[in-house]
Image (cartoon, rainbow over all chains, first blue to last red; front, side):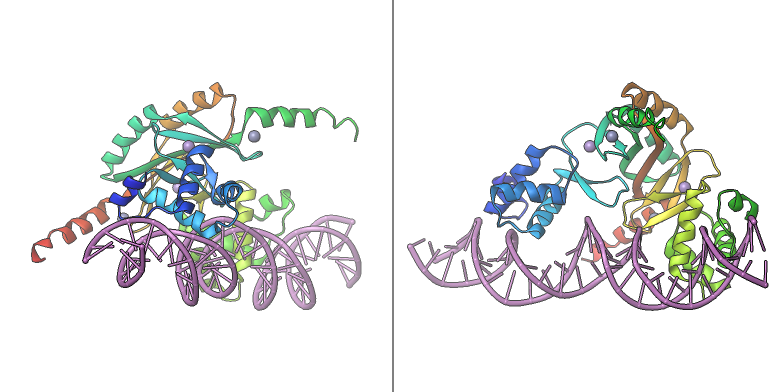
Length: 146
Length: 146
DNA sequence: CGGCTAAATGAAATCGAATTTCAATTTCAA
DNA sequence: TTGAAATTGAAATTCGATTTCATTTAGCCG
Ligand SMILES: [Mn+2]
Ligand SMILES: [Mn+2]
Ligand SMILES: [Zn+2]
Ligand SMILES: [Zn+2]
């Protein structure tokens, strides 16, 4: 990692070490704040802006990308996997993924037709996850009381 | 319109009249600020928060929905048309649309498989529009000078 | 090993869109 | 016409994102 960054003109620091490590451990769709909290468990002197800047850096060097699900907070996603879309549960705000190769294949010709040069393709499905559906059902079981 | 709102428990006001009219005239992907400016041309006493609230209202009654292209500003889109996705040009920030019925048809089974209850489906393609590609090409034509 | 310079850091300040507050005004059903 | 509820406009607030700035540090060179 140190070497990888060096080739891009960046230095390694203890904070960066912790932040990178934490990011690749914690999994995907993490927010700055979530990662910040996690990082502070290793070293509670790391600043929020340092975490933010390093998340940006991870994106700049191509190891992650920002994900915006329209709820006002940016999440960060490793780019090490196949193209995928996101399910976003509006109740528990949990993000899950789905495979999207076929969709992407269908989308490219559409873009070509309009001579649009594609950088990124995003698909997001908002709704209610299985777990939250059950919870809601439970709630609906007891309006008899009123 | 007045009647439609009445059934939903809302009142009609001169400001609302102007705002609704302007929204349905101006076309899609309008931001609060854009609509605000437009509205002020009819009546420069209308407040920004009133425009904002009425845009929200238009969404609440199902006549529009928010569109978030990840550039930090919310746009508003009428819901009177078939499902469509968005091309977002990262250079000129212009938004164009593409038909998406087939995509949606492919996406629903994917959601079903995970027992995810779908509210909305969004597809966004970021990149460079035809016009901006030409501009960039022109710029690239003259590195001979250096 | 020092010395140096660009990069990195942390705290605080700033930004900007979104949203809320609140006092005053207006709508509209009765 | 009257009163309750909805609406409005201006200002204040919120909150995540981003910048500023003084200080520290990494890593290269001798
Ligand atoms: Mn993901
Ligand atoms: Mn649209
Ligand atoms: Zn859920
Ligand atoms: Zn463009």
